[in-house]
Length: 88
Image: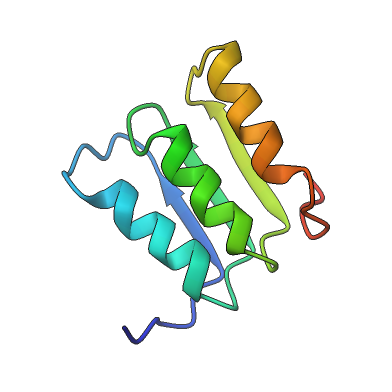
């Protein structure tokens, strides 16, 4: 898969089947992505966690509109445990 030179992805009110998988792939394969903003329902926390485990370029992640519960946030925290690139 050839990935474009992305630096900022913002997803609000997108309810397209498969978009969560696509974002996960971008996180895993796009070495230029630095900003990701998500709204509720765009992707599951598991998809995000899988993408973040492989990502070393993201510096800003906004999930404030996702409305995930404590269990979901624990999954995200575990995925971020070894992440050194995120600043906010």
